[in-house]
Length: 240
Image 1 (tube, rainbow, N blue to C red):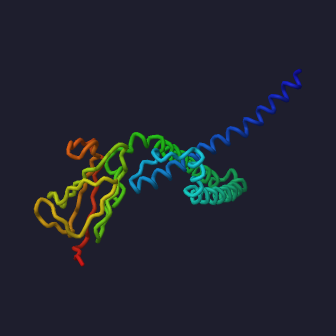
Image 2 (tube, helix red, strand yellow; image 1 turned 60 degrees about the vertical axis):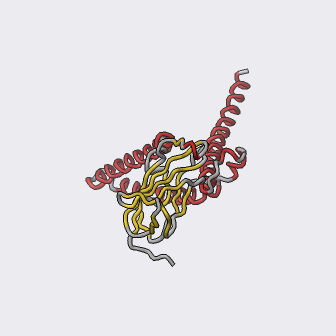
Image 3 (tube, rainbow, N blue to C red; image 1 turned 30 degrees about the vertical axis):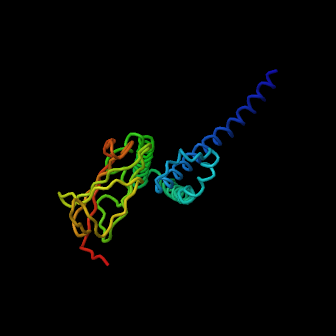
């Protein structure tokens, strides 16, 4: 009976050793597939949760965004392993000398720095739900402080149930544009009309704000500020 029990325990342990990594791997594939699909559909102003993709669809979409990171991690891990073996061999050969002791201290500090970076990365990943709404984070393009020479495409994070957005653009301290696009992007032009004046896209520092709008546009029911960002037009541009 004891032999049968020990054999059963071995089979259970063997199965658990396979199932646990497969579960973790499936969860990672689903996560990267979901994030990739969500970013792609948000570019077109579509909420990915509304199009009915299944868990299998998300898993099948994960290899493309994971290809480059996995290659980099694999090559980096192989290089780090070779470097570790080479350094360890030199330390073992010179063990007991002051130089070897200094090298061991450097390795210890390097390991501590690597562990710190790993912990920070995990905390940032887990804290996305807390920092995702902060200003400067929800506005995608142009990048904060970017220098442009042509009218840029303003893009920001789509908000669920938002029917439109209120975008306000300032050049210096003067407002030069207010728009209500229905999608999470707005293409600026070389010239436009605002408040009865013809405005032109010219040199200066621009700051833009975005608020999500809910319900009918006439109700003017806005959510909290989605974000604010700036870009600079380096030199005056001419309309063709």
